Length: 466
Image (cartoon, rainbow, N blue to C red):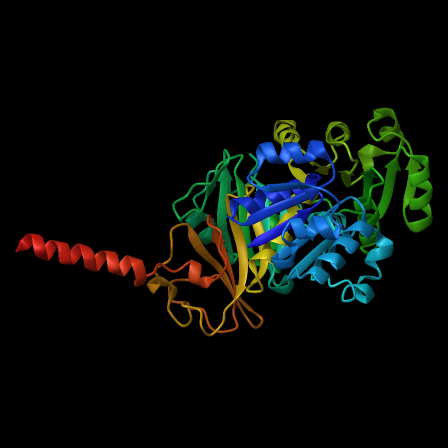
């Protein structure tokens, strides 16, 4: 597909990097020469220096026959104008990053007028993920599927967890909770395990099942969880705004620490339910004076990875149970694991998942990447022409490293066995190491080129036999 990305900041660069690995034809537009040079040296894309809302620039980029135009500059107004212009010039689909809450509230009214097919709000999406993580103890990632009926939870195995050292088949027989351990990452390797696989301390384990069952299993991992009643947020960013609003609806007390006095005044006016404090979130004396050791959750959301790490270390030293750290740079996130900072929030990664789903087409309902882009958990809705309909799973010839994790049929959530089959209308979750766009991509072909090759080999054998 031909994709144009306008604005190459952290989100734009991450998008270009992910989309190029899937083989798309990527053109990027930015008016910063240094950014253009960096992209030209590091990515296999076509860079163009210019303004994304300029008709001539868009035409130079081939906007008139582009499949997607994605705008992620730092200004919402420019993003909307770029999409409006691109759609007028013939772009098939447009997506714009719109972060300002005042625009977000009006999107239903202006989305159609602007020709927007998708609205990107990394800050709001990040706030949603943080709020979900606060509901399940021990989780470092949570993703909902099948409209909330199925949940995926990722957690790090600790020494005191009862499943450490156990085989998967033993876990299933002992605890008798209908969940699936569908993937494990160990030392930066993605594993789709079988029943003999043994869980080790330090593994990152992905479990999938009915939402209530996943919660029940989480209580086995952390038998005495602390209910989150009060949270301290460092950094008065847009994520902090969206998060504080969500937590207020969940009846969780919020304290925000922000060193910019002007931002404090705005937050105090927009978030009357939150306590806003003007101060430095890396100042240990200030944090302790604000009762750091008594909070149930600590979330560092400043614009600096380094400051977020420092603040989170202070919270770790104060024995705060739930700590979340926002990271933008990949090299910084590699430093957090040895420090015991397991829950990392990456807005660009969250939004990249959403855009990849958007680009791949309407057949994909939900997409969650594992270990960067090493693997994926994907939700499809089965259609009549899909090649797996009505066939017992034990008789399907699937491509390597693909697992059918759950089947959701009406209100029933099934962890399938070999005798189960997919029916039309089912919501199906796949775990895979490949980039999958439809069910057709997971079934090994028995015809076409493979069949022709077999026939050719057979004919050659007959000739030799003569």
